[in-house]
Image (cartoon, each protein chain N blue to C red):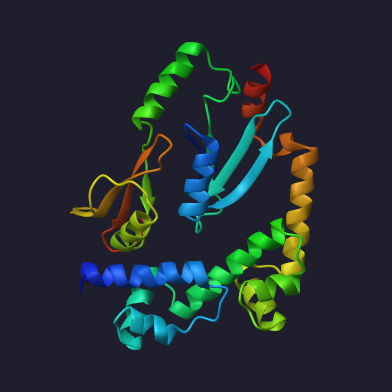
Length: 137
Length: 145
């Protein structure tokens, strides 16, 4: 059954709210109420549209932000865990590994190595045909 | 035997704006971002669920990095400024939701999503020279060979 345009807008507004506030404690009941939908309908429609439950999506957003910060920011793993909205380093590590495939510290080490290699030997990352073109120019 | 496409180039009028669109707005992942001594920036991004496809965001008008002659560069400029370079389909599991979300983020579309025989489609601009079909295929899954 098609979703009405105004309902689409409500779900999208709720999703954008989660995108901007994922690092805070988000009350999914409150988001459902603000979307003028019951918790059941909000959960069902959100999951149908985004292929993840609202809770799974929130976890995904937090893990994704953690992934970026582990690669780019000079913060400890615990600080990143707290800053993206996880309450326990244990659950953060488990969920990070489940989503990304590596433990947070291992992911950080690999990202750092790649960054150092890119700085020292950028050509290793560029297909040879492009290097030929660029160096001739 | 060729079994996959590993890299595909999107020519863009501004590489940093392209980064903002594909990474910040669409949520693509940066795969490689390195800059050579002569300033040539090799920037590749991948769709969130397609990490083995690297989309190279190439700025053909930056300096003379690509070795194109003036005539070629002018041709690129004209096409990119017209937004005439795009040729591709971006898959979405829900076209109407993605349309509402991206419209709220200021992305430009040619009209609202429409039902086509192959699915629900909206035409989207990346703002740096390319238009794409953004399609939710009939049945909800990307077409398989």
